[in-house]
Length: 431
RNA sequence: GUGGGCGUAGCUCAGCUGGUUAGAGCGCCAGGUUGUGGCCCUGGAGGUCGAGGGUUCAAAUCCCUUCGCUCACCCCA
Image (spheres, chains in turn purple, green):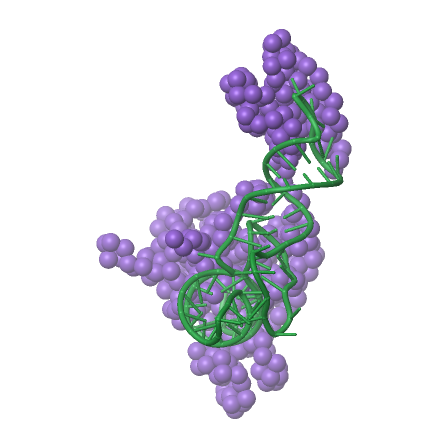
């Protein structure tokens, strides 16, 4: 029989790793809540049409990366490839626009895209993100960028690069596209094959081509800034000024464009250059047409999404992710199978009182059980042997120094609170 | 979807141009102490050499196919 493994691009989060995930998720929720965002949990799958309309039918995500299937009712269903469209759907469906002028939502959970996996890229991956819907002001853009920036700072990531650009509104962007296409048509033959395709399909994508000779040609072309309409220019200037006001460092990247159709005006990415090819921790921007496109009122929006795996990798890389200890406080060792019941009962008592307790295997030698206790990292071993049990006592051994003392069960239970406090004190001293 | 690299013990890897029973370190189990962990010593268990086929007297080693992992392109978190 062949071994069944996880599907390509997926992986198991094992107990030790899960502690890091829990820690990170907790931090994320704390920061988002402090900025006034409410958590929303949308389904893992949606009607396929939501993503076709929301993300854009000609984007790579929709064209070739979605996990789409037909359910038994004949409906086309898709595992969500990103979080914004579902949140916007819920915003419209629950008519949140009628409740407050601005709606601030955050999400955290798995996303699915059928791509070839590589460093920092998976088929099931996890994102957290925010959507601020209903505020057209540049203050909203700045606040969202600041939020991402502050969140990373609170995690200890203080040297990330923020890349910032404006892709204009549908009107001035279209003008730029035509100008760009016209300018590049002449040199089309010198472009790489993918760029030749992009020339027709999505000329903006040419700007961030990694090919050196393409970059050479592109550097001759005027930047998108030259084509911004007065409103777009003003909006972007304001965003930049607001970020400067709160000392957020950013890099203007005139060539930054983003792959999803819904972006307008501000786009940004936060980058860790040590990550490899997939170096964006976070990407986002403004999407003023999206709510309307999805069947809602004409309401502006701005948000970002960040990859949990990439954040965790970055934290590990920078040594911020220390071990999360999950050692038992007490390791109970019954000596002989006759005492197992006693130990079992005592372990239950302690656990019900809220202590972290492991129970040894009474069939094994004391030596063997102590080894296991040692490996578990337990602070105390409680030895339950015939000698002491005849007097209804147990031996409490402090693993750190090897000291041990006999207690009656009642005395032990009475002593535990102090023992645990002393333990926590010495642990915090070490740090 | 395309291209490069890699698949040998639980983990990290060695195994030269094909040559007996495939090795090391760590880990695991047991013993060295009749009831005492960490250090040390001794012993033990554990491998369809990713899978299938081919060449050969002989394949972990050479050839083909396939699967998987990985990195990169495309794209993106």
